[in-house]
Length: 306
Length: 154
Image (tube, rainbow over all chains, first blue to last red; front, side, top):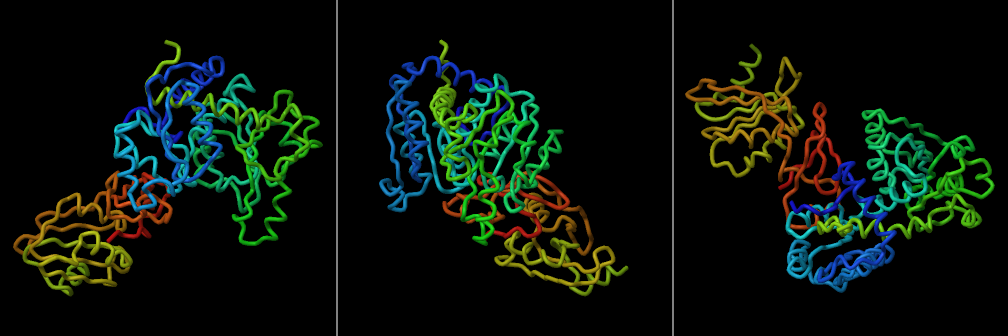
């Protein structure tokens, strides 16, 4: 398998995560460095995702590289029945790095097996989205000054939300304390609970998004509760407002507490929270460019400080 | 004693392979794993036979065929209790329990319709994440499935 690829956050070590965070901090301080001069990066978006694609392409442009690719499989040979393998092999002739998003789970892993060009997974269905996790981690370290010994509260859809699963896996290296707040239908899958138990990570599960939970958190990671996850629409209506955050709930939080959300949000964070000092979700999205610059330079084995 | 009777009930084998102590629900999957549909030699399949150890069991006898160990070990995915007997001239010359491999390529079908392996002409690959009960994780989409209910690819 090729070396620089990033398919899943579970594949990389604590040291590699810390290296990526150092790189992200470097790029925040030096956003425009011509490190990719002469390099071509392909962004293959078999499934549209404007936010992620623009963030990756901004990262490449700020590093002085060139971008080729497509933003929708309808404009690629996939619509003519070309296999993923053939598309990846063909693009490998042109590009130094492939950033890909695909609606099928495992597509990026498979891509690493058919090419020597490094692959960066920009999301494969409901499976993995490691650049989101890196920007989450960077946001946490930036706002808290550390990753160790933090109390992280995850709220909303903990069952299907891949971002919370990946964040849990990445944070397992840093002695976290987790609070899982959700309805019974959307609670954290048992396999992740077992991982916490096996690693001796302290966690509690809650049905109520109570003041005690909010006021003892360093990070509150909100997620969107999606209507389509519920077989009973009444159940959705009941649950959706139980796990939403309003300004009046933030009166007694820890001084450094910050609210994260992978976005897009619907009604799980009230608009009046946006102006609170605890709101960090828009800056979090901005950190995505630095995190992706870090991932791209690591994939191409480029040391930004040299 | 009862084991001997059972073996006689499904006819003795002169040369070949006997796979015994297969859970009843796994017998036909074992047939598919070994691709016995295409076997050119005599195949005897017994199922729901009385067993001291298992209550009821299945057994497969294949005349004049000797399989690679790795092929036989694939049966452990669905039948971890299975025992392989190699028969030469009516005698058991080798007897061993099947061993579950760490990685299983091909054979098992991923149950996730959105997995790349179900949408691209490629081989599946599973890692064994636990035994007793056997659980397999798809290398590609990460879905875990139970070994006993694993669907065997054609």
